[in-house]
Image 1 (cartoon, rainbow, N blue to C red):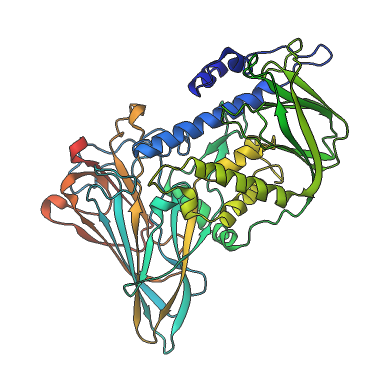
Image 2 (cartoon, rainbow, N blue to C red):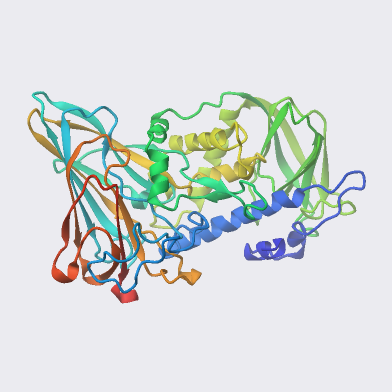
Length: 533
Protein backbone atom coordinates (compact mmCIF):
# COMPACT_ATOMS: atom_id res chain seq x y z
CA UNK A 1 0.00 0.00 0.00
CA UNK A 2 1.42 3.35 -0.99
CA UNK A 3 2.12 5.96 1.67
CA UNK A 4 -0.44 8.40 0.21
CA UNK A 5 -3.19 5.80 0.43
CA UNK A 6 -2.20 4.98 4.01
CA UNK A 7 -2.59 8.57 5.07
CA UNK A 8 -5.92 8.86 3.28
CA UNK A 9 -7.19 5.76 5.06
CA UNK A 10 -6.18 7.34 8.32
CA UNK A 11 -8.12 10.48 7.47
CA UNK A 12 -5.10 12.71 6.84
CA UNK A 13 -6.20 13.84 3.42
CA UNK A 14 -4.66 17.30 3.32
CA UNK A 15 -1.95 17.55 0.69
CA UNK A 16 0.42 19.04 3.25
CA UNK A 17 0.05 15.96 5.43
CA UNK A 18 0.28 13.52 2.55
CA UNK A 19 3.43 15.26 1.39
CA UNK A 20 5.33 14.02 4.42
CA UNK A 21 5.15 10.43 3.20
CA UNK A 22 6.00 11.15 -0.43
CA UNK A 23 9.53 10.85 -1.85
CA UNK A 24 11.52 13.87 -0.83
CA UNK A 25 14.83 15.48 -1.64
CA UNK A 26 17.79 14.95 0.65
CA UNK A 27 20.26 17.72 1.53
CA UNK A 28 22.94 18.05 -1.10
CA UNK A 29 25.68 17.44 1.45
CA UNK A 30 24.25 14.03 2.44
CA UNK A 31 23.07 10.88 0.65
CA UNK A 32 19.32 10.18 0.75
CA UNK A 33 18.16 9.53 4.31
CA UNK A 34 15.71 6.77 5.22
CA UNK A 35 13.09 9.00 6.83
CA UNK A 36 10.25 7.52 4.80
CA UNK A 37 10.88 4.08 6.28
CA UNK A 38 10.30 5.39 9.82
CA UNK A 39 7.23 7.39 8.88
CA UNK A 40 5.69 4.61 6.83
CA UNK A 41 6.14 2.24 9.77
CA UNK A 42 4.32 4.64 12.05
CA UNK A 43 1.48 4.97 9.55
CA UNK A 44 1.19 1.20 9.13
CA UNK A 45 1.16 0.63 12.89
CA UNK A 46 -1.58 3.21 13.31
CA UNK A 47 -3.57 1.61 10.51
CA UNK A 48 -3.31 -1.84 12.08
CA UNK A 49 -4.41 -0.43 15.43
CA UNK A 50 -7.39 1.37 13.88
CA UNK A 51 -8.52 -1.62 11.84
CA UNK A 52 -7.82 -4.06 14.66
CA UNK A 53 -10.02 -2.16 17.08
CA UNK A 54 -12.78 -1.75 14.53
CA UNK A 55 -12.91 -5.43 13.64
CA UNK A 56 -12.80 -6.61 17.24
CA UNK A 57 -15.61 -4.31 18.32
CA UNK A 58 -17.97 -6.00 15.85
CA UNK A 59 -17.25 -9.47 17.19
CA UNK A 60 -16.71 -10.65 13.63
CA UNK A 61 -13.43 -8.93 12.86
CA UNK A 62 -11.56 -9.54 16.13
CA UNK A 63 -7.90 -10.37 15.88
CA UNK A 64 -7.16 -8.42 12.68
CA UNK A 65 -3.42 -7.83 12.51
CA UNK A 66 -2.82 -10.15 15.44
CA UNK A 67 -3.53 -13.50 13.88
CA UNK A 68 -2.27 -12.84 10.38
CA UNK A 69 0.62 -15.22 10.44
CA UNK A 70 0.54 -15.99 6.77
CA UNK A 71 -1.01 -19.43 7.17
CA UNK A 72 -3.71 -20.23 4.67
CA UNK A 73 -7.05 -21.39 5.96
CA UNK A 74 -7.15 -25.13 6.01
CA UNK A 75 -3.39 -25.51 6.29
CA UNK A 76 -1.39 -28.15 4.47
CA UNK A 77 -3.72 -30.95 5.48
CA UNK A 78 -6.74 -29.59 3.62
CA UNK A 79 -10.00 -28.00 4.82
CA UNK A 80 -12.55 -29.44 7.20
CA UNK A 81 -15.43 -31.06 5.37
CA UNK A 82 -18.38 -28.65 5.39
CA UNK A 83 -20.70 -31.59 4.90
CA UNK A 84 -19.42 -33.66 7.78
CA UNK A 85 -22.09 -35.34 9.84
CA UNK A 86 -23.12 -34.21 13.30
CA UNK A 87 -20.79 -36.84 14.65
CA UNK A 88 -17.85 -35.03 13.12
CA UNK A 89 -14.82 -37.20 12.72
CA UNK A 90 -14.35 -35.96 9.15
CA UNK A 91 -12.36 -32.80 8.53
CA UNK A 92 -8.63 -33.01 9.17
CA UNK A 93 -6.52 -34.54 11.88
CA UNK A 94 -5.89 -31.36 13.86
CA UNK A 95 -8.65 -29.11 12.52
CA UNK A 96 -8.64 -26.02 10.34
CA UNK A 97 -5.80 -23.52 10.47
CA UNK A 98 -7.70 -20.30 11.12
CA UNK A 99 -6.60 -16.77 10.28
CA UNK A 100 -7.39 -15.59 13.81
CA UNK A 101 -6.42 -18.22 16.36
CA UNK A 102 -7.89 -17.88 19.87
CA UNK A 103 -5.63 -20.42 21.54
CA UNK A 104 -6.65 -23.67 23.22
CA UNK A 105 -8.43 -24.25 26.51
CA UNK A 106 -5.60 -25.16 28.89
CA UNK A 107 -5.71 -27.48 31.92
CA UNK A 108 -5.39 -26.36 35.53
CA UNK A 109 -1.89 -26.55 37.00
CA UNK A 110 -0.11 -25.68 40.28
CA UNK A 111 2.94 -23.70 41.32
CA UNK A 112 4.02 -26.26 43.94
CA UNK A 113 4.46 -29.99 43.45
CA UNK A 114 0.94 -31.45 43.92
CA UNK A 115 2.23 -34.73 45.31
CA UNK A 116 -0.59 -36.83 46.66
CA UNK A 117 -3.27 -35.19 44.50
CA UNK A 118 -5.08 -36.70 41.54
CA UNK A 119 -7.46 -34.81 39.27
CA UNK A 120 -10.63 -35.45 37.30
CA UNK A 121 -11.65 -32.87 34.69
CA UNK A 122 -15.03 -32.18 33.09
CA UNK A 123 -15.32 -29.43 30.48
CA UNK A 124 -18.57 -28.09 29.02
CA UNK A 125 -19.18 -25.81 26.04
CA UNK A 126 -22.45 -23.85 26.15
CA UNK A 127 -23.45 -22.65 22.68
CA UNK A 128 -26.44 -20.55 23.71
CA UNK A 129 -26.52 -17.33 21.65
CA UNK A 130 -25.88 -13.97 23.22
CA UNK A 131 -23.33 -15.04 25.84
CA UNK A 132 -20.54 -12.83 24.47
CA UNK A 133 -19.60 -9.83 26.57
CA UNK A 134 -19.25 -7.94 23.28
CA UNK A 135 -23.05 -7.83 23.23
CA UNK A 136 -23.57 -10.28 20.36
CA UNK A 137 -27.16 -11.40 19.87
CA UNK A 138 -26.14 -14.19 17.49
CA UNK A 139 -24.19 -17.28 18.45
CA UNK A 140 -20.58 -16.15 18.76
CA UNK A 141 -18.14 -18.02 20.94
CA UNK A 142 -19.16 -20.17 23.87
CA UNK A 143 -19.45 -20.16 27.62
CA UNK A 144 -16.87 -22.68 28.83
CA UNK A 145 -17.08 -24.39 32.23
CA UNK A 146 -13.86 -26.21 33.11
CA UNK A 147 -14.39 -28.17 36.35
CA UNK A 148 -11.87 -30.20 38.37
CA UNK A 149 -12.16 -32.59 41.30
CA UNK A 150 -8.85 -32.74 43.16
CA UNK A 151 -8.60 -35.83 45.38
CA UNK A 152 -6.11 -36.16 48.24
CA UNK A 153 -4.76 -39.68 48.73
CA UNK A 154 -2.62 -38.77 51.74
CA UNK A 155 -3.34 -38.62 55.45
CA UNK A 156 -2.68 -34.87 55.71
CA UNK A 157 -4.25 -31.79 54.15
CA UNK A 158 -2.55 -30.69 50.91
CA UNK A 159 -2.51 -26.97 50.05
CA UNK A 160 -1.29 -25.76 46.68
CA UNK A 161 -1.40 -22.54 44.67
CA UNK A 162 -3.50 -23.40 41.65
CA UNK A 163 -2.97 -21.65 38.32
CA UNK A 164 -5.59 -21.48 35.59
CA UNK A 165 -4.05 -20.45 32.24
CA UNK A 166 -5.95 -18.84 29.37
CA UNK A 167 -4.92 -17.25 26.08
CA UNK A 168 -5.78 -13.61 25.52
CA UNK A 169 -4.51 -10.06 25.72
CA UNK A 170 -4.86 -7.07 27.99
CA UNK A 171 -7.26 -5.53 25.47
CA UNK A 172 -9.78 -8.35 25.77
CA UNK A 173 -9.06 -9.33 29.37
CA UNK A 174 -12.34 -7.88 30.65
CA UNK A 175 -14.23 -10.17 28.27
CA UNK A 176 -12.12 -13.31 28.63
CA UNK A 177 -11.10 -13.47 32.30
CA UNK A 178 -12.73 -16.56 33.85
CA UNK A 179 -14.35 -16.64 37.26
CA UNK A 180 -13.20 -19.28 39.77
CA UNK A 181 -15.08 -21.09 42.52
CA UNK A 182 -13.77 -23.62 45.04
CA UNK A 183 -16.43 -25.97 46.39
CA UNK A 184 -19.03 -23.59 44.99
CA UNK A 185 -17.67 -20.48 46.72
CA UNK A 186 -16.23 -17.64 44.63
CA UNK A 187 -12.54 -17.03 45.32
CA UNK A 188 -10.36 -14.02 44.65
CA UNK A 189 -7.68 -14.69 42.07
CA UNK A 190 -4.37 -12.98 41.39
CA UNK A 191 -3.51 -12.30 37.77
CA UNK A 192 -0.11 -13.09 36.28
CA UNK A 193 0.69 -12.21 32.68
CA UNK A 194 3.13 -13.99 30.44
CA UNK A 195 5.14 -12.03 27.89
CA UNK A 196 4.08 -11.52 24.28
CA UNK A 197 3.61 -15.07 23.08
CA UNK A 198 4.20 -14.62 19.37
CA UNK A 199 7.17 -13.80 17.23
CA UNK A 200 8.07 -11.61 14.28
CA UNK A 201 8.06 -12.04 10.52
CA UNK A 202 9.27 -10.23 7.44
CA UNK A 203 7.27 -7.50 5.77
CA UNK A 204 8.09 -8.73 2.28
CA UNK A 205 8.86 -12.40 2.86
CA UNK A 206 12.04 -14.44 2.89
CA UNK A 207 13.55 -12.53 -0.04
CA UNK A 208 13.79 -9.39 2.11
CA UNK A 209 14.21 -10.74 5.64
CA UNK A 210 13.35 -8.48 8.54
CA UNK A 211 11.49 -8.66 11.84
CA UNK A 212 9.13 -5.77 11.29
CA UNK A 213 5.76 -7.53 11.55
CA UNK A 214 4.14 -9.33 14.46
CA UNK A 215 3.59 -13.06 13.97
CA UNK A 216 1.06 -14.47 16.42
CA UNK A 217 0.77 -18.15 17.24
CA UNK A 218 -1.69 -19.91 14.96
CA UNK A 219 -1.91 -23.49 16.25
CA UNK A 220 -2.01 -25.51 19.44
CA UNK A 221 1.37 -27.02 18.55
CA UNK A 222 2.93 -23.55 18.66
CA UNK A 223 1.47 -23.10 22.14
CA UNK A 224 2.96 -26.47 23.03
CA UNK A 225 6.39 -25.26 21.93
CA UNK A 226 5.87 -22.09 23.99
CA UNK A 227 4.78 -23.76 27.22
CA UNK A 228 6.08 -27.31 27.47
CA UNK A 229 9.50 -26.45 28.94
CA UNK A 230 7.94 -24.41 31.77
CA UNK A 231 10.21 -21.42 31.12
CA UNK A 232 7.36 -19.20 29.92
CA UNK A 233 5.38 -19.73 33.13
CA UNK A 234 8.49 -19.26 35.28
CA UNK A 235 9.12 -15.87 33.68
CA UNK A 236 5.46 -14.90 34.13
CA UNK A 237 5.80 -15.45 37.88
CA UNK A 238 8.99 -13.38 38.15
CA UNK A 239 9.04 -9.64 38.95
CA UNK A 240 9.06 -7.26 36.01
CA UNK A 241 12.41 -5.83 34.88
CA UNK A 242 13.74 -2.86 36.84
CA UNK A 243 15.17 -0.23 34.49
CA UNK A 244 16.78 2.01 37.07
CA UNK A 245 19.38 3.25 34.60
CA UNK A 246 20.32 6.92 34.20
CA UNK A 247 19.08 8.76 31.13
CA UNK A 248 19.14 12.32 29.85
CA UNK A 249 15.79 13.68 28.72
CA UNK A 250 15.11 16.51 26.28
CA UNK A 251 11.50 17.62 26.57
CA UNK A 252 9.92 19.85 23.92
CA UNK A 253 7.10 22.11 25.05
CA UNK A 254 5.52 25.61 24.58
CA UNK A 255 4.91 24.98 20.87
CA UNK A 256 4.33 27.76 18.34
CA UNK A 257 3.74 27.44 14.59
CA UNK A 258 1.91 29.28 11.77
CA UNK A 259 -0.86 26.68 11.53
CA UNK A 260 -3.16 29.05 9.66
CA UNK A 261 -0.74 28.88 6.74
CA UNK A 262 0.85 25.45 7.23
CA UNK A 263 -1.52 22.91 8.71
CA UNK A 264 1.23 20.28 8.91
CA UNK A 265 3.88 22.63 10.31
CA UNK A 266 6.73 20.50 11.61
CA UNK A 267 9.55 20.97 14.11
CA UNK A 268 12.81 19.08 13.51
CA UNK A 269 15.76 18.62 15.85
CA UNK A 270 19.14 17.59 14.40
CA UNK A 271 22.37 16.51 16.05
CA UNK A 272 25.36 14.21 15.80
CA UNK A 273 25.61 11.01 17.79
CA UNK A 274 28.06 8.21 18.42
CA UNK A 275 25.96 5.10 17.81
CA UNK A 276 28.41 2.93 19.74
CA UNK A 277 28.02 5.06 22.87
CA UNK A 278 24.42 6.31 22.68
CA UNK A 279 20.94 4.85 22.31
CA UNK A 280 17.99 7.15 21.66
CA UNK A 281 14.34 6.62 22.54
CA UNK A 282 11.60 8.92 21.30
CA UNK A 283 8.06 9.68 22.32
CA UNK A 284 5.64 11.89 20.41
CA UNK A 285 7.81 12.14 17.28
CA UNK A 286 6.38 11.40 13.84
CA UNK A 287 9.51 10.95 11.76
CA UNK A 288 13.20 10.24 11.93
CA UNK A 289 16.17 10.10 9.62
CA UNK A 290 19.81 9.21 10.06
CA UNK A 291 23.04 8.74 8.20
CA UNK A 292 26.02 7.34 10.11
CA UNK A 293 26.57 9.86 12.91
CA UNK A 294 23.73 12.23 11.90
CA UNK A 295 20.22 12.13 13.34
CA UNK A 296 17.14 14.23 12.75
CA UNK A 297 13.80 13.65 14.46
CA UNK A 298 10.63 15.58 13.71
CA UNK A 299 7.05 16.02 14.87
CA UNK A 300 3.94 17.81 13.72
CA UNK A 301 3.62 20.86 15.92
CA UNK A 302 0.52 20.30 18.10
CA UNK A 303 -2.38 22.49 17.02
CA UNK A 304 -5.02 21.43 19.52
CA UNK A 305 -7.09 19.82 16.74
CA UNK A 306 -5.30 16.68 15.63
CA UNK A 307 -4.87 13.93 18.19
CA UNK A 308 -1.23 14.88 18.54
CA UNK A 309 0.36 14.15 21.95
CA UNK A 310 1.71 17.21 23.70
CA UNK A 311 4.47 15.18 25.32
CA UNK A 312 7.53 15.17 23.07
CA UNK A 313 10.64 13.51 24.49
CA UNK A 314 14.09 12.49 23.35
CA UNK A 315 15.48 10.04 25.90
CA UNK A 316 19.24 9.54 25.74
CA UNK A 317 20.78 6.39 27.20
CA UNK A 318 24.55 6.55 27.40
CA UNK A 319 26.64 9.45 26.15
CA UNK A 320 24.73 12.73 25.80
CA UNK A 321 24.11 14.18 22.33
CA UNK A 322 25.69 17.60 22.91
CA UNK A 323 24.72 20.47 20.60
CA UNK A 324 21.57 20.32 18.49
CA UNK A 325 19.74 22.55 16.03
CA UNK A 326 16.01 23.27 15.64
CA UNK A 327 14.28 24.02 12.34
CA UNK A 328 10.71 24.57 11.20
CA UNK A 329 9.32 23.03 8.00
CA UNK A 330 6.11 23.27 6.02
CA UNK A 331 5.35 19.59 6.59
CA UNK A 332 6.83 16.33 7.79
CA UNK A 333 8.94 15.90 4.68
CA UNK A 334 11.50 18.31 6.17
CA UNK A 335 12.85 18.93 2.67
CA UNK A 336 15.43 21.61 1.84
CA UNK A 337 13.75 24.75 0.52
CA UNK A 338 10.64 24.14 2.62
CA UNK A 339 11.95 25.72 5.82
CA UNK A 340 9.61 28.20 7.49
CA UNK A 341 9.82 30.81 10.21
CA UNK A 342 7.55 31.04 13.21
CA UNK A 343 8.06 27.47 14.47
CA UNK A 344 9.43 27.45 17.98
CA UNK A 345 9.43 25.53 21.24
CA UNK A 346 11.10 25.37 24.64
CA UNK A 347 13.55 22.54 25.23
CA UNK A 348 14.07 21.39 28.82
CA UNK A 349 17.01 19.12 29.57
CA UNK A 350 16.88 16.93 32.68
CA UNK A 351 18.53 13.84 34.12
CA UNK A 352 16.47 10.97 35.53
CA UNK A 353 16.05 7.20 35.14
CA UNK A 354 14.45 5.19 32.37
CA UNK A 355 12.00 3.75 34.89
CA UNK A 356 10.84 7.25 35.80
CA UNK A 357 10.36 8.14 32.14
CA UNK A 358 8.35 4.99 31.43
CA UNK A 359 6.23 5.55 34.52
CA UNK A 360 5.32 9.05 33.36
CA UNK A 361 4.58 8.00 29.79
CA UNK A 362 2.51 5.00 30.84
CA UNK A 363 0.40 7.19 33.13
CA UNK A 364 -0.11 9.66 30.30
CA UNK A 365 -1.13 6.83 27.97
CA UNK A 366 -3.65 5.46 30.48
CA UNK A 367 -5.14 8.94 30.84
CA UNK A 368 -5.49 9.29 27.05
CA UNK A 369 -6.99 5.81 26.86
CA UNK A 370 -9.56 6.69 29.50
CA UNK A 371 -10.53 9.79 27.57
CA UNK A 372 -11.57 7.55 24.67
CA UNK A 373 -13.71 5.30 26.88
CA UNK A 374 -17.00 4.19 25.37
CA UNK A 375 -19.90 4.79 27.75
CA UNK A 376 -21.06 1.65 29.57
CA UNK A 377 -18.29 -0.45 28.03
CA UNK A 378 -15.34 -1.92 29.91
CA UNK A 379 -11.88 -1.17 28.63
CA UNK A 380 -8.46 -2.72 29.15
CA UNK A 381 -7.63 -0.73 32.27
CA UNK A 382 -10.73 -1.96 34.04
CA UNK A 383 -9.12 -5.39 33.98
CA UNK A 384 -5.36 -4.83 34.04
CA UNK A 385 -3.64 -2.84 36.76
CA UNK A 386 -1.33 0.05 36.00
CA UNK A 387 1.54 -1.86 37.64
CA UNK A 388 1.04 -4.82 35.29
CA UNK A 389 0.71 -2.61 32.21
CA UNK A 390 3.77 -0.60 33.17
CA UNK A 391 5.73 -3.78 33.87
CA UNK A 392 4.73 -5.31 30.53
CA UNK A 393 6.12 -2.25 28.72
CA UNK A 394 9.47 -2.74 30.47
CA UNK A 395 9.32 -6.43 29.66
CA UNK A 396 8.72 -5.78 25.95
CA UNK A 397 11.56 -3.26 25.91
CA UNK A 398 14.02 -5.79 27.33
CA UNK A 399 12.59 -8.77 25.45
CA UNK A 400 12.44 -7.33 21.94
CA UNK A 401 13.27 -3.62 22.14
CA UNK A 402 16.53 -1.71 22.16
CA UNK A 403 17.48 -3.12 25.57
CA UNK A 404 17.35 -6.67 24.21
CA UNK A 405 20.43 -8.58 23.13
CA UNK A 406 18.59 -9.24 19.84
CA UNK A 407 16.23 -6.30 19.23
CA UNK A 408 13.53 -6.75 16.60
CA UNK A 409 13.37 -4.34 13.66
CA UNK A 410 9.85 -3.34 14.71
CA UNK A 411 11.18 -1.71 17.88
CA UNK A 412 14.80 -1.00 16.98
CA UNK A 413 14.20 2.69 16.28
CA UNK A 414 13.36 3.33 19.93
CA UNK A 415 9.79 4.55 19.41
CA UNK A 416 8.29 4.24 22.88
CA UNK A 417 4.88 5.22 21.45
CA UNK A 418 4.67 1.89 19.63
CA UNK A 419 5.59 -0.18 22.65
CA UNK A 420 3.13 1.55 24.97
CA UNK A 421 0.23 0.97 22.59
CA UNK A 422 1.11 -2.53 21.39
CA UNK A 423 1.46 -4.03 24.85
CA UNK A 424 -2.35 -4.00 25.16
CA UNK A 425 -3.43 -6.03 22.08
CA UNK A 426 -0.46 -8.39 21.97
CA UNK A 427 -1.44 -12.02 22.58
CA UNK A 428 -0.08 -13.74 25.68
CA UNK A 429 -0.93 -16.50 28.14
CA UNK A 430 -2.42 -15.20 31.37
CA UNK A 431 -2.72 -17.07 34.66
CA UNK A 432 -5.21 -16.84 37.52
CA UNK A 433 -3.61 -17.90 40.84
CA UNK A 434 -5.55 -18.94 43.94
CA UNK A 435 -5.01 -21.25 46.94
CA UNK A 436 -6.66 -24.68 47.10
CA UNK A 437 -6.69 -27.10 50.04
CA UNK A 438 -7.66 -30.73 49.57
CA UNK A 439 -8.48 -32.32 52.96
CA UNK A 440 -6.75 -35.52 54.05
CA UNK A 441 -8.40 -38.44 52.28
CA UNK A 442 -10.98 -36.11 50.73
CA UNK A 443 -11.50 -33.94 47.67
CA UNK A 444 -12.15 -30.37 46.59
CA UNK A 445 -13.90 -29.06 43.47
CA UNK A 446 -12.47 -26.18 41.42
CA UNK A 447 -14.57 -24.63 38.66
CA UNK A 448 -13.25 -22.09 36.13
CA UNK A 449 -15.91 -20.51 33.94
CA UNK A 450 -15.90 -17.81 31.30
CA UNK A 451 -16.67 -16.81 27.75
CA UNK A 452 -14.24 -18.21 25.18
CA UNK A 453 -13.67 -16.49 21.85
CA UNK A 454 -13.54 -18.87 18.87
CA UNK A 455 -10.88 -19.16 16.21
CA UNK A 456 -12.18 -17.96 12.83
CA UNK A 457 -11.44 -16.65 9.35
CA UNK A 458 -12.17 -13.01 8.55
CA UNK A 459 -15.56 -12.32 6.99
CA UNK A 460 -13.99 -10.21 4.22
CA UNK A 461 -11.30 -12.77 3.33
CA UNK A 462 -13.33 -14.80 0.86
CA UNK A 463 -12.39 -17.94 2.78
CA UNK A 464 -14.73 -20.91 2.56
CA UNK A 465 -14.36 -21.15 6.35
CA UNK A 466 -15.39 -17.57 7.10
CA UNK A 467 -18.49 -18.71 9.03
CA UNK A 468 -16.72 -21.50 10.94
CA UNK A 469 -15.93 -21.23 14.64
CA UNK A 470 -13.27 -23.44 16.14
CA UNK A 471 -12.03 -24.55 19.56
CA UNK A 472 -9.00 -26.47 20.73
CA UNK A 473 -8.61 -28.33 24.02
CA UNK A 474 -5.29 -29.56 25.40
CA UNK A 475 -5.46 -32.25 28.06
CA UNK A 476 -2.15 -31.93 29.89
CA UNK A 477 0.00 -29.19 28.32
CA UNK A 478 1.84 -27.30 31.07
CA UNK A 479 0.00 -29.06 33.91
CA UNK A 480 1.59 -30.59 37.01
CA UNK A 481 -1.56 -32.54 37.86
CA UNK A 482 -2.02 -36.29 37.51
CA UNK A 483 -5.29 -36.73 35.61
CA UNK A 484 -7.23 -39.95 36.15
CA UNK A 485 -10.25 -38.94 34.05
CA UNK A 486 -11.30 -36.25 31.61
CA UNK A 487 -14.67 -35.74 29.93
CA UNK A 488 -16.34 -33.18 27.68
CA UNK A 489 -19.94 -32.13 27.09
CA UNK A 490 -21.97 -29.79 24.89
CA UNK A 491 -25.16 -27.92 25.76
CA UNK A 492 -27.51 -25.76 23.68
CA UNK A 493 -26.37 -27.32 20.41
CA UNK A 494 -29.69 -26.73 18.67
CA UNK A 495 -28.30 -23.60 16.98
CA UNK A 496 -25.04 -25.08 15.68
CA UNK A 497 -23.92 -27.71 13.17
CA UNK A 498 -20.67 -29.53 13.93
CA UNK A 499 -18.49 -29.75 10.82
CA UNK A 500 -15.30 -31.24 12.25
CA UNK A 501 -14.07 -32.74 15.52
CA UNK A 502 -12.16 -35.57 17.14
CA UNK A 503 -14.19 -35.74 20.38
CA UNK A 504 -16.83 -38.20 19.23
CA UNK A 505 -19.91 -36.03 19.85
CA UNK A 506 -23.03 -37.02 17.90
CA UNK A 507 -25.81 -34.50 18.63
CA UNK A 508 -28.17 -36.03 16.07
CA UNK A 509 -28.15 -39.25 18.07
CA UNK A 510 -28.08 -37.63 21.49
CA UNK A 511 -24.37 -38.11 22.22
CA UNK A 512 -23.51 -34.80 23.93
CA UNK A 513 -21.10 -36.11 26.56
CA UNK A 514 -17.94 -38.11 25.88
CA UNK A 515 -14.98 -39.54 27.77
CA UNK A 516 -11.56 -38.25 26.76
CA UNK A 517 -8.25 -40.01 26.70
CA UNK A 518 -5.91 -38.07 29.04
CA UNK A 519 -3.05 -39.51 27.04
CA UNK A 520 -4.25 -37.73 23.90
CA UNK A 521 -2.77 -34.26 23.88
CA UNK A 522 -5.25 -32.40 21.71
CA UNK A 523 -8.94 -32.31 20.84
CA UNK A 524 -10.66 -29.93 18.43
CA UNK A 525 -14.23 -28.92 17.62
CA UNK A 526 -15.54 -26.83 14.71
CA UNK A 527 -19.08 -25.76 13.90
CA UNK A 528 -21.25 -23.37 11.94
CA UNK A 529 -24.14 -21.46 13.53
CA UNK A 530 -27.28 -22.67 11.76
CA UNK A 531 -28.67 -19.17 11.36
CA UNK A 532 -25.58 -18.14 9.34
CA UNK A 533 -25.01 -21.20 7.17
